[in-house]
Length: 358
Image 1 (cartoon, one colour):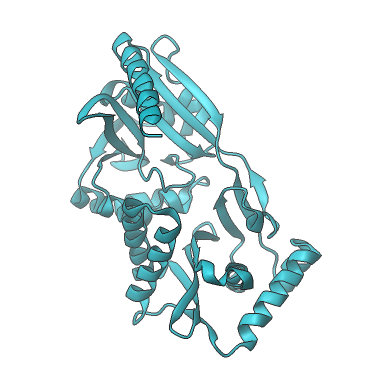
Image 2 (cartoon, one colour):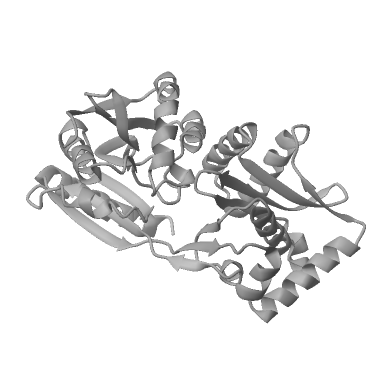
C-alpha cells in the first residue's frame, strides 16, 4: 500500500510553475501520457484562458512526491448573466484532444479513486464533462461515483487517427498508403518543387512571430473562433521556445499558401499534427498533403515512432494510412432536484432561443 495521500489545489500560474519538475517526472513515468496533458501545453492554455481553472495534485505525504495530476476548468453556463449550473471540465476544452489523468503507474487504482472521491466532496459542481478521452483508467474513475448520487452518460467521441511509422520513408509510402494517394503526393510535390514561385520554408527564431500569426489567421479564416485562436497562438509560441514545435509553410512569393504546425513529444516519440491551415485559393495544388507528408518524413528521419493526426475522419487523413482508435465522451451529473430542474429549464430555453434566432 502507498502512504497517506493528500489532494492539493493548484490554481495560479506561480504555483503551477513550481510543480513543473514533478509534472514532467510523472509525464515520463505514465505510459498513458500525451502532449495534451504535458506541462508545457497546459501552461500555454492557462496563460491564455480567461476561465477559472484548478489542478488537483495528489501527493504521497510520506515522500512529499506528487503521484497524480488532474487539470480542470470551472465555469458557469446560463442566460442573461445568470449562471444556475456550475460545470467543470478537463482543462483545455474545447481544443484539447485526449484529456485524462497524469498518474504514477504504481498503485494506479488507489490514486484514481482518491481523485474521484475528492471531486465528489472537495469541489462544487453540478455537471462534469470529459470529451474525447482514450485513457484506460477512465473505468476506475467512473466506478468511484456512486449511482445513488450521480448519473453517468457515455457516448462515442471523435475517432483518433495515428500512424505507426516504419524505419524509412520509402517503406511508409509502400506499406501505409495506396497507389492513388501516392500519385497525388507525387503530383502535388512536383507542382510545388518545379515552380520557382513556390517555396517550402521552416520557421526560425527570426520568422516565428510572423509564421505563428499567419498560421493562426489562416486557421481563423476557416473556423472563425477568436478565443481559440488566442489559445493556439500561446501554445505554439511556448512550444517553439522549448524546441518542441515544427512549423513548416509553403509560400507563393510573399503569399502564404499553407502551414502545418506539429507539437513533438520526445518522451513518447510522437509527432502531433496540431494545426494544418491553407489558403483556399490554392486548393487545386493540394499544398496540405505536401506539407504533411514532408512532416511525416521528418518524423521518420528523427526516429519518431508515431505520427498522430489527432481527431476526425477527414478523407485526407484516412488516405495517409493511420490506425483508428475510439474515444469516449463522458458527462457526470449530480442527482439533485435543483440540478435536474435547472437543466430541464435551460434545455427548453435553448430550444426557444434557437427557434427565435434561426
